[in-house]
Image 1 (tube, rainbow, N blue to C red):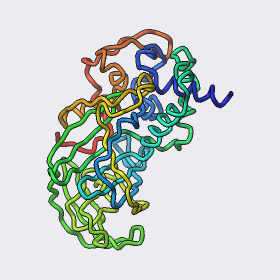
Image 2: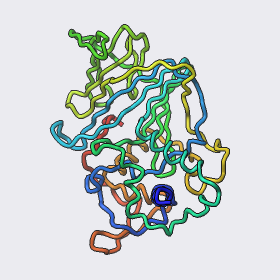
Image 3: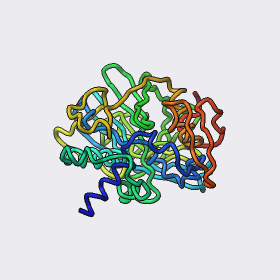
Image 4: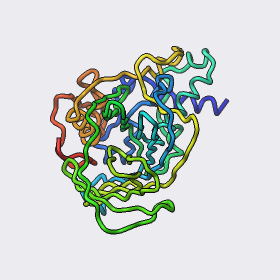
Length: 334
């Protein structure tokens, strides 16, 4: 019984509509929220996943990024997977996908009367620990998927804010790689060094001829082998491959609208809602997410009312300026 009540309380906090928590003690930035940024978004509906290819090779990368404009400052981490298929590659956060799995599969295991008993009146004070307690303190998983569609030569970037998938497409990038002297061994593979300038940052990567896929983490590619490490010249961002897996029939999924077949859980994990945007608009969303996160919570209604730490009401409006402060911005050239 105690276990069941614990799960109920977790679901009420994570899955109930945003409006139910219009009043709460808030921090103005993600730094003030101790960088528990992932708790600001809602889990994806696994029933909205549609298989679009099968992975021939899956690479696991440790991703480290600075949340201060200093390589010696505060750093956060995530674990990303790169699935490589014949037609499609998918790059995504492994931790975020696990959160989605926990929420969706537990809901699907409940009987209808138990789902009906989940109401916003349940006290939310201890709920975030139930869903996220297994995530280490330095890990901050975010929704930032990159799909590479090889036939159409297109990249599609999908980032989730609250219940909405914001997406933009662009041609697969043509990197101007310069080969550099030096070799390094990563996961037992001899790697060669290369460098490029991409949208305002200089990147150094290590790739191996022994794995003949012209792919890499994030948007990287175009080399005669798989990229196993990438780092910017300032030391703010770094990917390092920590595992390579080959599985047969390992599906590559895309989140689409209206795909879920079980309407019992719609009120708690709605179907994916997709909105198309531009790359510049997407970057503006990430700037909001880091420097004015309450405006992310207020997007649908354009404004919302919150309580500060002294129980004073204040209103947040989406039209208000977003502070022009540093945040982990991969692309400087918009």
